[in-house]
Every structure is written in C-alpha cells, then in structure tokens.
Length: 494
Image (cartoon, rainbow, N blue to C red; front, side):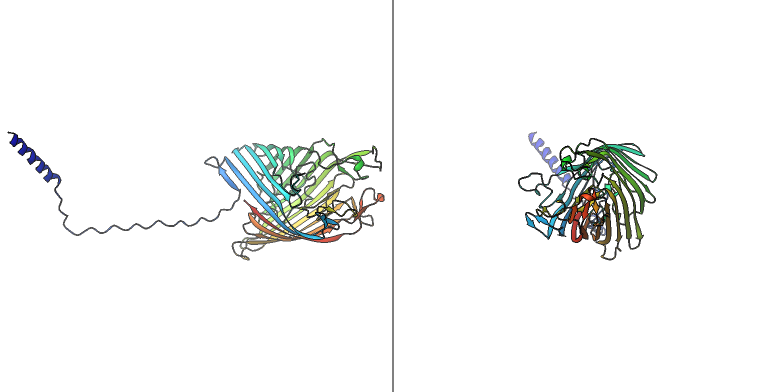
C-alpha cells in the first residue's frame, strides 16, 4: 500500500512538470519588422535675454499682484580736472589731476502685498573719493568707510485711482521735473545740481521727511507735500555772517510746502515711483510741461550792519519756483532714432545775495592759505545755487541702431547751464553770469542697464573774487577762467 502511494505521488510530480515546463513552438510566417528608433531629445535653444524693465521681481502670488522688487545701480567715475586757482590736495598745491570715485551706489527694495499698500526703501552711498565721502572724524581718513544710509523710506496708501497718500523720508519734491530725477536714466553724465536747491541743508541729500499726496487725473499729474525742515548742518552765528548776505537759519522750525504739477500731451509716464526718466531712448512719445514750487518761512537769515556784538538780524522766507518742458520721441522707427529735449527755468529767492558753491566729487581739499577769494571755491567748485535766476537746457539724439550693430547704440548730447545770482557782480556792477558747457556721448551697451558716458565740460573758475562794502553784500568777480573737465562714467543698472 505504501509503495502504491509513492508511485502515485511521483506520477503527479512528473505530470505537473510536464505541464509547466512545456515550451510553446515559434509562430509560423514572416518575422515582424523592427521597431522604429526613437529620436534623441532636442537641445533647447538658449532663451533670449529679457529686458530688466521693472527690475528684479519676486512674485508672492500666482498673478503677480503681490511681489517684492529690487533695483540697484552703480556709477563709477574717472575724471581729469584742471583745478581752480590755489587748489591744494593733501597739503600740496595742485593745478590739475586725474581722480577716481563712486558717484552713486544704490539699492532699492519695493514691496506691494495689496494693490492699495506700498512700502519702499532706498539705500546707498554717494560721492566717495580718496578725500571725501567717508565717515566724519574717522581717524583712518576722511574718504574711508563711506556710510551706507537710507535715502528714502516710505509707506503709501492708494485711496482711489486719482489719489495716493504716503509718508516718511520721501522724494515727492517740488520745483521741477529734474528735482525728482532718476539718476539711473539721466541722459547727461550727471545732473546740474542747481535742481537740488536745498541739498543737505533742510533736506537729507534731496529727500524730505513728511507726508505727501500724489496722483493722476487724465493727463494731469500732481504731487504735493508738507515736510519738516532738517536742522542745517552748516555752522552759522550772527557774528559770523557777512553783512546783507543770507545763510540758512539754524533756528528754523517751520514746515516746508512743495509740489509739482505736469500735463502729458502724448504717452503717460509711470508714476508708481517718484523718479522721473531722463531719456526713454525712443520707447515712448512724451511731451510734458510742468511747474513747481518750494516754500519755507524764515528758512534763512542775514544781518544788516557791521556790528560784531549783538548785530541786528532779519529772517527771510525761502521761495523757489520752476517751470519746465520735456520732449522725448522716436524720429524714425525703422532706424530706431530718437530725440530728447529738456529745458527748465528756476526763480530762486533765499534772501539777499545768497550764493552756494558746489563741487561734485571735488578733487581738491582746500585752498592755499592766504589766497584771495572764498575758501570753498577750490577744485572743481562753482556757484551752482543762489538767489536769482537759472536756465538749463539739454538735447540728445539716439543714433541709428545699425551704426554699431545690434549690440550697442550711440547717443551724443549737449547741455548748457546759466546762473544769474544777485550775489555775484561784474567789475562794472552788473550781475556776473555763471555759464557751464557740457558735451558728451553715451555708449549704450544695454540701454541704461549698461552704458559708458564720456563728457567734456568747460567750467568757469570763480575763485578770483573780492568783497567790497560798496556792493552791499555782493561779491565782485574780478576775472573768470574756463577750466576743462573730462569725465568717463561707467554705469550698471539692474
């Protein structure tokens, strides 16, 4: 019986092996065609560079309505300068020199988390050379460790499509379009400085602390502001004043009222940010006319007699007015040429005989001891701000795009500044005008985002002047010599 069970089990195993181990015979007929080979993946074509436009933007919502935006630019100067008479650098008399400097280095951060709310912070430095721009009283040298400070910090609320209100350290300034200039898109190598009439006296390098309203109704743009006057950083006492010559009032506590109004005849310019564009390089057709004002009661003071002990002083209201016109449009769309024109008139009243001498990235440090004339007319300084009238104009032409190929463009320009300050007299008693001539060429490697500017300036040297009591406070300019300046600026703007 046991042998019979073994036999049955062995027979079952053999039968199952036969079933599962059976091989299916090959199919008869022709063999199937081989599979079509798969093509290798295509190499992606490199994307064309996208214009920076609004800057570097980080969207915080899928539709881009909530975002962070960053803008940054740097402007580096190399300059040959024939100095004003009696200029000294590091204790050595210098008739001319070549110097290097950082004109501007800025970083802007903009945040909009709701269509009605906007915050804006502008950080940076200006005017660092081997002599100037550093931390005051730094034992390592006056040009070292240039401080990075806040230029602008605002919070803004959009009331409706016609009005936005904001506050903080702001650039919603009056007098002219160029008083709120975008320094990254200016056509010339630099601004004339006359457009910043209270620079670093009652403002912080052109920015004011207060509240403002701005908006647009049709083609009409406006901005108005009420600001505090910063305490002037110029040491001034009645005994130190020259007779009948106004200076900024160190006791000024009055508010500053300012505004600017313009009308656009053709394309409207963006007004989210306060900066006004210097040249659109043919991307818009713009014709704007505008006017502005700046008023600060008792902003300056003067004395009217040569008395050292307890002299009588008078305060004066700062009353500034400007009117301008800006035109920027394509000339020929095929060659992509464009014309840019700008002109402005200023009427400034700071009080009697006020004159301020300014030198941008000044290569001099002081004047030879005992030399005639004002001590602050060394290096490249000249009378850029004062009581009186000023006229400024510039014109530029964007040359055809085929001239240098697709990678670069050329834009020659000229500019002229004429100041007529009541505090400067000729030897015959008439006003002595200040005339400044500029001619330059922009090499636009990527629009304003990368450009090199070469500028020649004929600058008047006003250091030969004296103060005669018979002139009732005005300076007599004995002679004027023109000094050449050649500046190369390299700019990167992202």
